[in-house]
Amino acid sequence: MAPPLQAPGAVVLIRPHRFRPNELTRVDNAFQSLPAAPDAAGVAARARDEVTRLAEALDAAGVVVHLFDDHAHDRPDSVFPNNWLSTHPDGRVALYPMFAVNRRSERRADVVRLLQERYRVDQVVDFSGSERDGQFLESTGAMVLDHRERVAYVSRSHRAHPEALARFCATFGYEALLFDTADAEGRAVYHTNVLMSVGSAVALVGLGMIRTAADRARVTDRLTASGREVIELAEEQVREFAGNALELTGRDGPLLALSTRAAASLTPAQRRRIEATTQLLPVAVPTVELAGGSVRCMIAGVHLPPRPAEPLRASLFGAQPGAVRVPVAP
Image (cartoon, rainbow, N blue to C red; front, side, top):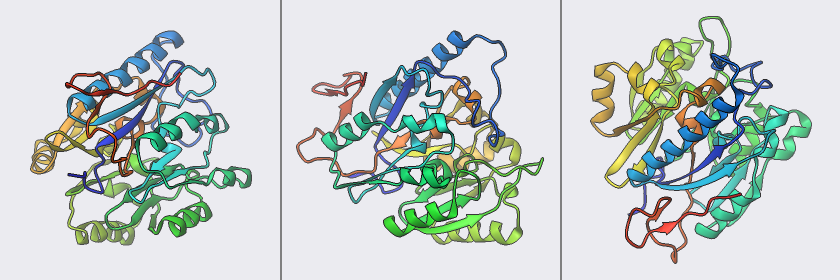
């Protein structure tokens, strides 16, 4: 059985070997923080290991993991592939224009080639030329996509230019639902996917950080009309990355991938409401979170239809009999 539109059963992860919080994104990313001590090699090693543990946890839950390594010195944020890549059930892949100059080389042809080999890819749509015009749209960081209802929820920011957004929506057939956000200091939320997560049955939303009552009502009403239960997150929970979660389809059904920090911030009542339909899958990624993103940012979901000749289950670690070992890129 195919996974539901909103919850892919396969993902792309990038394991960085030169990770660091990116100095060029600190200008508008209030979620970033600096390491407690200037230990660049230790920070990079811990981030690498956190990606490995996330891959292991997803694989153990029955999610297909395509894991690539990145040894480049000049790609501090390569751990976040969901900012430059999106995949779609109609067989299309999209590449996106990135705000920070040192993030633009994160777009990797080998990742696209693997998708073309394993899945049906009919077209690669490249929006990255908009960088030359200063028009950025950082994929499913800037947009939280409701694939079922064809709605793109977007917090206005430097990372979501309205013209670039309009091109995406016209090309892929989505309606943009735009709103303004502000934290307690009045700063806009840099990426929509730290504010909200839209699953098949449940949506987590930091409603209090949406500036106007009218926009809060628009977002809530649209999600409720689509059949989702809306769980409101406090700003303190958003800062703990509780909104930066992604529903995936595992061996036993839907699961919500998020960090242990995010999971710890949920109230018992919120956990019960989520777990009524979706298993929580928390993974510790405290080093990666220094860069201002968490588990959802680390995952590029694969919504593409698989090629009929491919096995239904591909395992990164070869745990299942007859499993296919997913190649690791150089």
